Image (cartoon, rainbow, N blue to C red; front, side, top):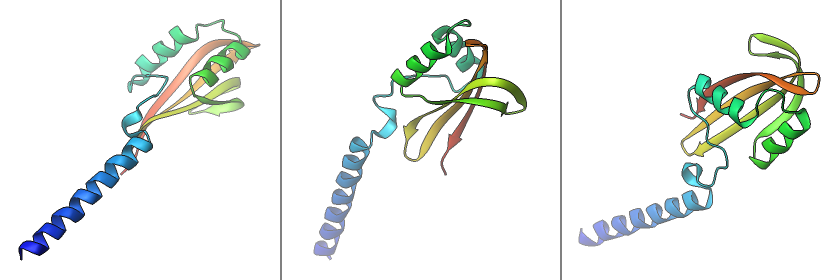
Length: 126
């Protein structure tokens, strides 16, 4: 009976060590993220406005988004319930197992300049 308990304990310790190593290798908890946004969309919008003030050129906005690790693409049409002729669609996630935080944003363009912002936030996971 003692041998079975010891084997079970060893097995659990090995599993715990494996999980810890995997978490470290995968960046568990969002370690090293370059951008920190609020989970409140209104606050995240204000943060984006400070980061990319109205009047920022599309090219400069895209350069900064790339540096920050934000996926982005020029879009036309709908974002949520709004429709825009041109906007930069942004998709950013951080966190890790088991829940990922995800922000989606539209940097609305007029001509070649950022003029407005829309932000959504959600959690992905079990």
